[in-house]
Image (cartoon, rainbow, N blue to C red):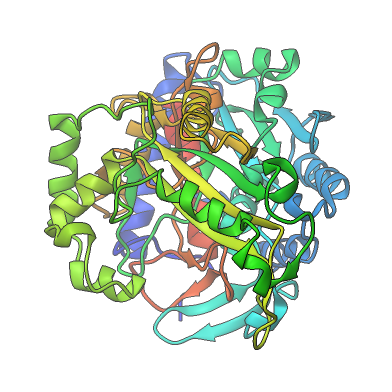
Length: 510
């Protein structure tokens, strides 16, 4: 089992202490040049992290016990207040709840008087859950032994994103309580709608106070548990955009079919809204479902040679068989080779059906002709595409194909995001990871999405990314967990994750 003062990667405690002394010496050199006023005692911070381990773990358990679920309109206001209180406890002096047309955001500033300012993006909301699907109650955040992994905390939001975020807060507690100088000023933006597509993130981040505070920052990062079970870390330079929407066919809007569910025998003379939805969906993609055929849809730019080289380097170190086993997938699209499948993953937009709902879906049959059918859809976008253009093309396509009556209800979404590998925010990550004995993989963009566009696009035009050691799994799924005590010395446990944020903040100050 891993000690509470976790070792990062495959670096021995003695080597890691040497690394921390080098970092402190570098900051001392900056202090001598007048760039910074004090030299930190990194080992004192590390000791404080270990001393505060139980308190930090309990803080995470308490946070998981309070789920804020935007999709269910559950605990959003109390969740925002809880987030604000945690920010104050971690040392943020200016803390304010910012109202939007949706759920409130939390804005906080920690002014250390430092020459460098860094933005931090949090989300205080979590995904929905069904307790019956979990092996451990999702709000009790129990510590559970997971063979080959170690001691994990299991609960909704454990890895997405309360675990990594709590580790970041624990880093701030440790720096302050060890009596050490905070290396950078921090601007925290914490939203409560990420899991529904961040529909009001623009209102929040573009609020005059928030925008002014972020304008002087060198970029914005989101805490994450980025280590796989083999200890490897991938540094992504962006993420796809996303649009979440619902397509609804109904007898009422169509002017045909029933106004309420009727007996299925009447299908012989009554139109079916359910079939109408199916036929409309079929026009959106090719026969195999893999190529978008929406008229006038934004086109994806070709993959750059630099990104193609990144993908080739990364896939050469990743095991295709393990990935297929993880996903339960025997073949990639078109039986593509491993590298080409990953190139498609990075470069291609998608139209995905999350779920289809219509009529009766319970045990046995009910022989009804439904009056309404709905499809939950998500559209993934790559740089060069926008949410607004994708939605406009979809609506125009349906209307031109004779399906203008089908409702297009957009519930959230945002544009893709991209950051240059040379950005200080990214280079500092690579430096910390390499100094901890890791060989990070660079990846052009994640296939998933987060609202980083609000930082990388004008008017802020800032670098944005993700950072953090540690491991977790099960986001959006049952038995979600975050690693607390690691069984593998190459993978950081909770305290190792905390120290990764300590080191990152001091690296950003160099």
